[in-house]
Length: 145
Image 1: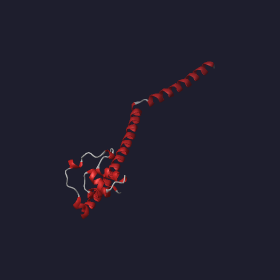
Image 2: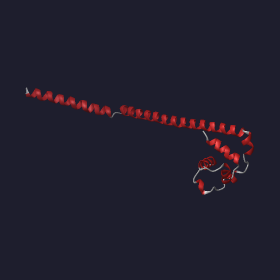
Image 3: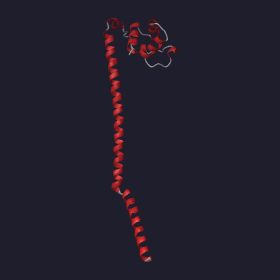
Image 4: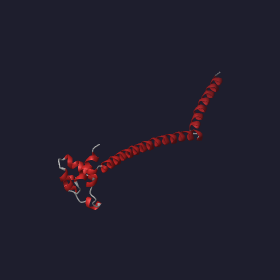
């Protein structure tokens, strides 16, 4: 009886080892690994597509905003009061150094907005930025949204 019991226990243990080894082999098999890698690559592609879509959407929004700004500038340029007074000076003359009051502003529109917010008159701004008064009015109109 004990011999039969030992044989049965050995058979059960062998079966358990077989099941464990078989599952480990299947888990590390080439088709299984390929399936995992394929799934990871698909997830990466989806993530990249989302990133590209958001970048494209942002670019499209910026392009629309730029087009609106251009249309607004064209409308303002068609205004006879502003169209005649816009200076035709060379770009080099416009880029003369500005007094330190302006800080680190990037362009004429920002400089104009900054000086207007500080209470300067349009004449003072025109003198300080070395542009005409209608240009100051034009830049002020562009900066309003």
